[in-house]
Structures are given as C-alpha cells and as structure tokens.
Amino acid sequence: MKFLRMFNKEFKNICGFDDVKDIIMHVLDCTENFNLLLIGQLSSAKSLFLLGIIESRKGVYFDVYNQSLDMLNKKTPKITCIDELDKMSTDFQNQLLNFLEDGHIKERSSHYEIQNCKVFATCTDISGLSKSVKSYFKRLHLAAYTEEQFLDVAVRLLPKLKDTTARMIGERVWNQGNKDVRDIINIGKLLRNIDDREQMGYVLRP
Image (cartoon, rainbow, N blue to C red):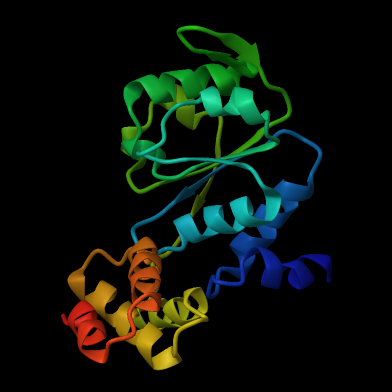
C-alpha cells in the first residue's frame, strides 16, 4: 500500500500511531485545503509528527522561539507547522486566525496573501486556543507513550549512538518527568561531540 510504504520515510522515528500516520498522509496528499491539530500530553509524538512533515515536505516551522508569520511571505509554503500552538502569544494566534480565514497576513510593515497552505499544529491544552482558531482545525487526540515505547523512540532518534546509550538517554528524560523527545535529541547531539567516557557519564547521570 502506498501509505504504508511512505511511513518509513515520513515518520520513521515514531513508534505506533499507524492510524494517525495514515490520516496525516491523506491530508498531505489531498488537493483540498486542510488544517490538522494534534492534541496530547508530552511523550505523545506530536512534535515528532511535525518534524517528520517538515523534513520530508520542506514546510515552514513555528514554535515559541519563532513567532513571526512574516516567514510565510519569504517562503510562500504549501505546508506550515506550528508546535505548541497553545503556548504561542495572543498576537500570533490573532495573525494566524486572519491567515486561516482568508490567507491574509498583516504585519506592521506589510500585508500579503498566501493561498493553498495546509496548517499542522500541536497543543497540550486546547483551552489555550480561542474558539475561532479551534474552529479551523480538524482534531486528532494522541495517547501518551508507554515507557518502553518512549525508549524505542530514543533509539530511533539517535541512530549514530549505540542502542544502549540511546536507551539510557531515554530513561533519563523519562525519569525526569518532562518526557519531551526534543530533550532526547538535544542530549544526543551533545554526546556525539563527547569522546571522554567520564564526561559522557556525567551528562547521563540522573
């Protein structure tokens, strides 16, 4: 099947969620404009889905550190990804609402229009979104990973490290309670630049 063949490329780092993968692949490949909101707690693969979409489809990515929609004017993308939409500023959400309504972006110094752009977003607490913004999204609720699934994701995310090291990183992140896959990626990047075993042990210390 077409979608099953593409899972390895689009979402190779995600354990399970085959039904969600199927829905997202349909949305990515359909010709209609479609906005999708992934809702779930930490360790529910929300951010991993966005990263998979961005890496394979070359869209534009926004998060709490990058909240200027002016990037849309510079790249005129067909796909926009927004991580943790519920944590974005009120100003960003208001601009996004204009964009969702008619494709218009209004910045202080510019006003432009972008058509046929699909929006994929994630959130933890949907109450942080206005009713108007929520109305433009179809919603998918994602269950949280089990600890074993989370460790499997760590191994998939860190193919340049030994499986045992990747699992140790996953265990550290899980036991700290934040269960954020982005922490796995960041620690993995740090360890790739460390050759000394003592330093590596210090980084992985609980």
